[in-house]
Image 1 (tube, one colour):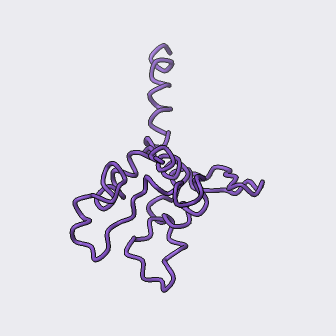
Image 2: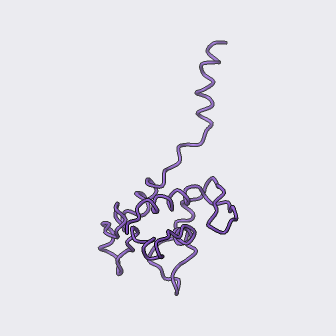
Image 3: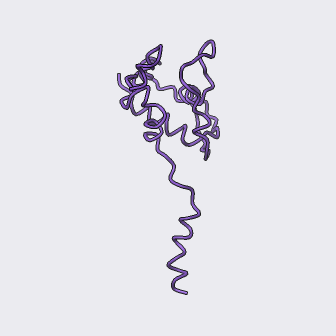
Length: 130
């Protein structure tokens, strides 16, 4: 009986989902190759693009000092492909699917949003400079 009590935590741990990446880890895996680890658009892959990737550290500065989280998440997800739909940036929505969390984009409405997308946007918010 004692071995069952000792084995129970291990059995429960095996049933849990694997660790979810953080926003910083998703940034390193999906964004840094073009935008650079600093987010300034100086990643190794940037040299192979026709247009330099955006400096992600200036998103708030380009938006009157406010970080537009919902707009940023829409861009990452792939809802905004540019004026003609020919954005160089790939759509990352399918890669960020998973658990949903309620997210208020500023309109007072709690919208179910993939937690990894929220974490990535929050990480980008932490990179902002003036």
